[in-house]
Length: 96
Image (tube, rainbow, N blue to C red; front, top):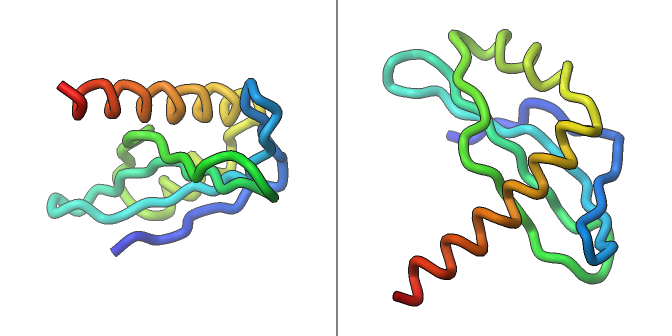
């Protein structure tokens, strides 16, 4: 089950000027460790919801919360770029 780990107050914009709100999500793995990724939701009109691949694996939920709480806006900017690029490569792969 997916758990909301942290909701960020910083807004992040894509190259087209769409503004996103970010949050960290995570889930427990069968091994007992936790994996975390970032999700970006458009603040208002325009833009598509975005999600990164797994950004981290942590030994427990508390460690995942600690990881998320230390992320700076510049990290979120890079993660949004990765999420956008990942969607493009997914589309290119699925069209083959």
